[in-house]
Image 1: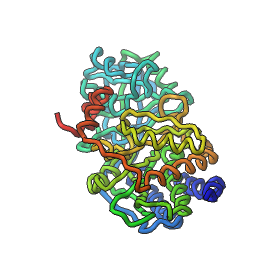
Image 2: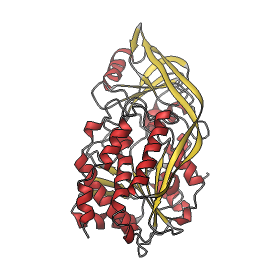
Image 3: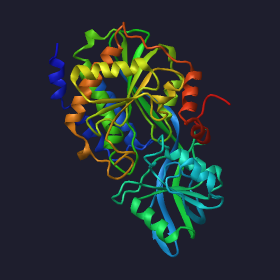
Length: 436
């Protein structure tokens, strides 16, 4: 039976859902827009034929953006606050640490200074360094404030949250500046006094996860996930409206193949991912990890045609992705390393088999993501449909009774993070869950 392929390749449900999400304009965690996006997603899953479509609420730390500015020698330089920055002012001598590698922080005296770092890493460096890692190196060194400079040109200041699960509001004011403003700051004001001011409304709020199911009512499940929230400065089309649209397309395609499912498929679209994986943390804290056969988490799909799978050392996941890609002659890239970001991680950190599914664009970093430019015209509907075909087949493959992927011990995950050089940064951030 191949009729489902033709239907998926001509489907409009994913694109229609993406349009509905971006037209909400603001899906920031804890807002009415995020809730409306979750409601639309719940309804779309039900319309696709999933059962028991519902919302599950949970509390979060609310944060609403106000005005922000950088003042330097009588000038005001454009910036935006990083979510969960404290609503404070700070001043100090500006120090430009370039890429903000761990050794850059080790070699510099940053106490009392305003630290500026780029949003990328050099090609020679062996891993990506997350924004929060750089922020907490600055905090640990006693910096007075943090400036996050985009590496993508186009006058696009980047956003992205700070804070930890234990302390959701960060320690020092944090702002994002465009590549061009960052270059100006480095050229004119490096080593000179600057001040940072962040205004934000900080209060309690609520978010929600979307759940629905398809296939037999087994105790075990394959999770198909994404996140519906986005940053308030843009449409959030690729991050992660496209991932949510992918969940809808997969559900729609699986409705044509429900008789082939031998394990329950649970769709979960999370809230509050962009402020620290709060929705998936909530789910992971209340789920039976042993019942989860595998997770297919779409966050960063459709940015390019080639699918990229972080497989977290699960050789069976790598084999399944390559096996399915071969059936459709679709380009894929598998990465066996740990990927301790996005909504698979609250499960994968404890040894649950999980993919982080993205697109390989051939470029470092997020591209247009987390900027004003994350808009819908950059999302290729052909890539959405093609990737939905591949991922639907993958879910069916994982949901077969004969497919067995052994869970790993948390100690193995911790050891792999150590071997890959990721543990030190996670400990600085406060994301290391394994003890000393």
